Length: 341
Image (cartoon, rainbow, N blue to C red):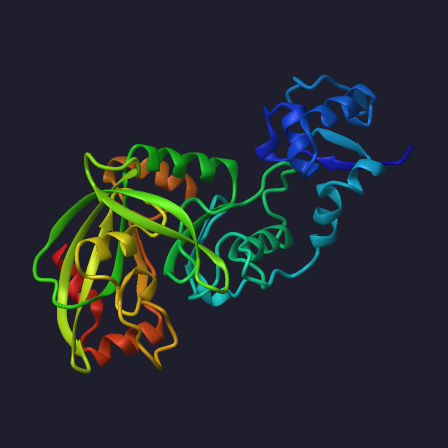
């Protein structure tokens, strides 16, 4: 029987053999992995091993050719040697553990039913494998937090298990401050703290299904608790209509959180018709929302240094977003207005 040989990488060290094999053989049920181990179709250093066997870095993992044809091995081999198609112009920071991107408008992070192109996650994974990745059999890069398809800006992807672990721990400790910039309908006068419950439901717009979010006051409804600090930084006009440029500091990261809460508090994002705003024409966007910065606590400097993260990272505002800011009267750099935070 023919076998393919794979060398265990740093991110495979200390992991159970069944977990590595299942991750590697995409789509295989755990029972199938156990069966393959019992039959000797998966070996370590030429020997049959139990499912609980702990793999070490540089171990030689042998997987029967017939399993690779139906699993992840084929995809990995095809990608090796390819040049990734991730646009280098959107890369903000790359280390061996973390990749930070400035996400373009109208590209989903994860697969979407109504999107036929390559998602950002697919492009990142292709880039990761083309560059050798972590040399891990089982590790797959992935986004560390959410960002909507039509929201631009800063998004973080893992590049190693260590990077994923540290970033996840920081999120669980609520040690990460994420600031967005958006344009709202009307004149939003003063800073507000929004605490609501958000519920998600499936809706139809005649073309495709999408997630619609509704907001209820604390004490009502069964939705997830959502917290946003909304800070007006500039008032202007688009034609005859008033508009407000605002900074949003989010404590939670729910689906459509800023969009839904902005509507619930009387000022939907400019052009966001899905949440009650008037349609704006000739701007090339449905609405304007940009993930501008991510900032970490000074208490976590040692952990940040381990994975190559700066205390604060910002994502350049897209040119079409800047053009809209100028249309409503904001001539100075938006960064000057954000110093009030």
